[in-house]
Structure formats: structure tokens, C-alpha cells
Image (cartoon, rainbow, N blue to C red; front, side):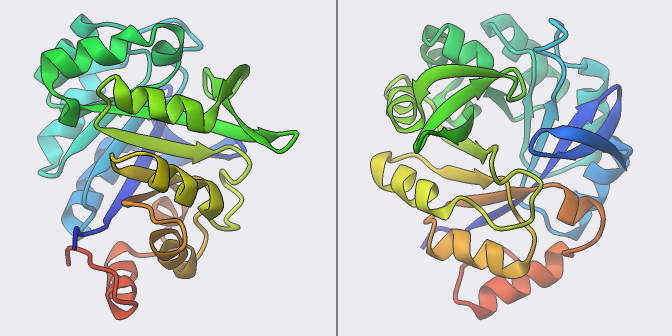
Length: 251
């Protein structure tokens, strides 16, 4: 059985870690370099670093911050935000990132997924999908959830897999920051539909929510922010509880 992964997410704006609810009302959650170091030390399996305003502001990810985080961690480290070319990814990998996460740029130019997986390997390419339910359908949104598209979540997931994505990071915008649990029904459908790992994001509030997303949602990894940043769920205790529920994790 493959071990399930616990992944803290550092949403970065103006050089600080921030957290909001449903993608808005952001509050400060600390220094990203310090947080990254702490997470690596207490047993996080991976880290995701998202420069959440890079696409909206039309700029590239902050390389100096990526360098500083990479110096502090010894676990896989995924970087996203403002990535739109092979050159962008080359730069970030040289700064110490292990994987990249693309979202808006992949929807605007799907061939980018093919280019990146061919150049760097699919294991390096995470496609992030932000979606919310509109009239009963899960629809993909871009630019930090600010731009709705006509793309269906499940159709897009199949396409990104076919183009060479190594993982999908699915964030339910409806659940984001609510601490009411992950979108397990959609996650289970995604997991049945594609053969690449699915990272669940949006809605973590209790240990049970993590248990549920691995059992009911069939997720391969669970990503969360505020419950980790503000010490509400310590990662070592979370992992022990997952083990108690017969969920295989790295302790």
C-alpha cells in the first residue's frame, strides 16, 4: 500500500504566508521560510509553495524566496504561481524546487503540460485545479479563483493526465478555508477517473476530515494550510491518528 502524504501549503503574498476563506479575506500566517523549516522538522511529507498573486499581477514567482525555502528543507518542495514556460520551470528547479504546480497557464495553453513533462518528466509536473460547483457542475476557475471558465473539472482532469501531468492538486473553492471537510465525493470520482495521484485541498478542519479524505475520498495526499499554520492540528499527532485508522503514513 502506498503511504498517504500530508502536505502543508504556504500561500505567499508580498513575501508573507497568508490564509483566507473561499480564496478571500486573507490574514497573515507567518514567515514562509521559518514555517517551511518547522514543517520539514516535524514530519511533513512535502511542501507546496504558492505565490498566489503572481498570475494576477502578471509577474514571475519570487526566486529569492524559493532559494531560501529550499535551503531549509529536505523534503520534496513544489512551487506554483506565475509559471508559463519551460524557462520558468528550469529557473525554479535551479533555485531548489523539486516540482512545479501550474494552473491558469495550463488552461490557457494546454500544450504547456506536454512540454514540461517531456522536458522534465511527469513526476515534476503538478497541475492544480481550482473548481467550484455552479448549477450542480464542478467548473474550473483561474487566477486564484477569480475567473470562471466553461471547463468541467472531470474532463479537464482527464486531459491533463493524457498530456503528461504527474499529479493533480484539486482545490474545492466551496470548501476552502471553511474547515468543514474535503470535497470527498468529487475527490473519489477524480480518483476513479485518472491513474495519477490526487492531492485533496480545501476544507481541512479536524483529524477526522483527513481520515475521511483518505478513506471516502480515495485521495493520495491531503494538503492544508491554516490548521497547520496556527497549530490547530499538529502533524505528528495527525499522523499517529491516521495510523490508528489503518491509513499508512510515514512517521
